[in-house]
Image 1 (cartoon, rainbow, N blue to C red):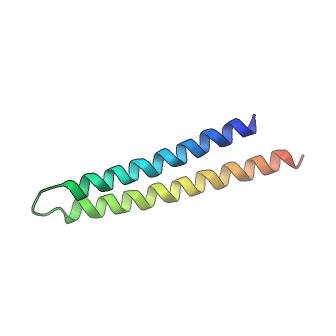
Image 2 (image 1 turned 30 degrees about the vertical axis):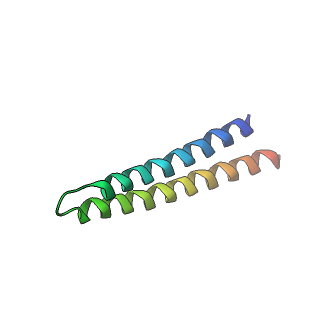
Length: 70
């Protein structure tokens, strides 16, 4: 059961990173004169998505380790 939850968590982490990259690409493709704000939002979102993916993956791995040590 824990293996399936780990797989789902890894898929969530991958999805978060892909969505962060997508938001950054939208900012980079913008043709507005003042697009620096959109790019900054994209970079911040990407960093937050990568951080959240790392935290979720670490939490799930820690939970799986505690289950397997019982």
